[in-house]
Image (cartoon, rainbow, N blue to C red; front, side, top):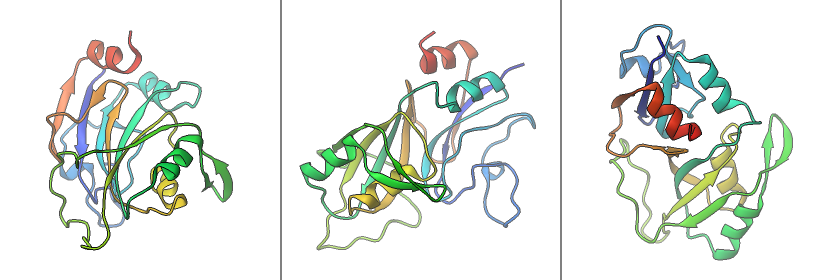
Amino acid sequence: MPQYFIVYKPYQVLTQFSSTENKVTLKDFFEVSKDVYPVGRLDYDSEGLLILTNDTSLNHRLLHPSFKHEREYWAQVDGMPSTHVLQQLMKGVDITVDGKKYRTKHCIASLFDHAPIVPERNPPIRFRKEIPAPWIRLILQEGKNRQVRKMTAAIGHPTLRLIRYRIEDITLEQLQPGEMKELSQKVIYKKLFHE
């Protein structure tokens, strides 16, 4: 029977259920049946929304590049990016993917007026009084390895903290790091594919 969970992956947790490196994994936080696995990935040093399922067709529809869907990231960056720099991000920047130059697709990028309310991170990012650490909202329709970090580095504002907040209409709302919520097939397909 298909099962669907959304989880808030904490910082410094591997997006898998087994570890060969003695690192903390999803198994340390979430108890699911053996055939349930994460759809896609979030880097060890990133946090946020992950979908866990045993539905292979959902996996294909979410990960195959021919099916475009929005992913929203909240990136806390080093230094205040100018409007011009944000426009560069939106038009596309050059990053390296698998050792080759890659131009990112158009995206939406904006500065938060006020820092979003997010859970404390342990350990916290390093704060430097003289350098601001604002938050950027980035909405992408592609997901290359470490893409957001590479994009913010390309504009000269490295990412200090990264949270995936949303995939289509599924958000982290009301979830704390390490928490999980089960959704029905009907709800998850409606929120992801508007069916």
